[in-house]
Amino acid sequence: MKKIILSKPLINVADTSNIVRKVLIENFPNEGRQTREFEKKICSFLKTKYAITTTSGTTAIFLALKANGIKNNDEVIIPNITFPATANAVAMAGGKPVLVDIDSKNILIDEKSLLKKITKKTKFVIPVHVSGRGNNIKSIINICKKKSIKVIEDAAEAFGSKYQKKFLGTFGKSGCFSFAPNKIITTGQGGVVVTNDKKIYLNLLRLKDQGRVGPTTGGEDNYISKGYNFKFSNLQSSLGLSQLKNIKWRIDKLIKIHKFYKKNINQSNKFKIIDFNLQKGEVPLWTDVYCMSRNKLFNFLKSRNVLCRYYWNPINTCLPYKSSFKSLPNSKKIQKKMMWLPSSLDMSTKEQKKVCHLINLFLKYKD
Ligand SMILES: Cc1ncc(COP(=O)(O)O)c(C=O)c1O
Image 1 (cartoon, rainbow, N blue to C red):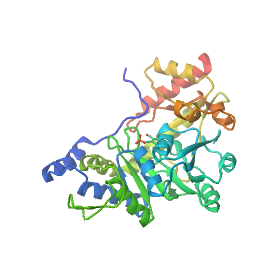
Image 2 (image 1 turned 30 degrees about the horizontal axis):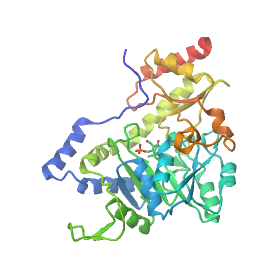
Image 3 (image 1 turned 180 degrees about the horizontal axis):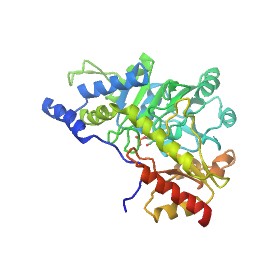
């Protein structure tokens, strides 16, 4: 029996090959024409002025912090429940990650806890739109504006998802997306930073390419600051360009998968599906569930070829960022109780029925 896994890339091999073929004929596999086209298409889809591709979602967050002027030891508030990439990008940029608790209803930043964590040293807040679920981003930006704190959105999991009908990732000073293989579109690895601010855009361009400002003819270029090599190749862009063509279909499919789970799994106090605001445009990249017997359910499904994914351990339990749960009670409450259900773009109704049937069976007889 075929395994049903969390998420797999959906690549149109013929279409992607056609674009790759052009890259090969032009003999320019480096960042170039196709990458510019991919960035332009991202801008027009997300309705943002600038999009700067980079090597990953992690380097997107790193670059965004740098381009927005992070200084050594600046405090950067991040949620305690996120992929460690958020914390690592802050640390890599010289900042100090400060962990804020989550709201256990939506697993996103809890605003009351956020207010308590802000100090004079706080320079950035990074809300993470987990699974495509939008933080109350306008309210977070309002809180931060009053204190001259910049908001950078970690929208790694939220490409195409909206908050009150505007794309997540386009509210803050910069928004960061990932094109890793489990995302709605994938370029193998890759990421993009979007911004509406020309100065930040120019900073991003310079930082991703060795601190260079041109004229980009080679060795005699002007290098005005330190920088990195986060170029995004035309080969990667070929994958992105092809997948962007049916982004609306991808979004609809993910919504359908989530709705099917909601309709067909019996929820109770012991098992809950975390809600999305579909009316306002949120796109469920994966369906996240709270389950009191999570590990037992996970293993039950695994033994029947259904592979879910455990939620991340809270950041404060990870060795490099170890601290107590004192100000993080909600993170503690959901620790080891959450996981994602399979939500692949090519998932069939038959496969979804199987997952729902097994979960209902477990909840009725095995839990
Ligand atoms: C919430 C979140 N932030 C950041 C990242 C980092 O992205 P990447 O894996 O492309 O570096 C990811 C994941 O992949 C993520 O899920």
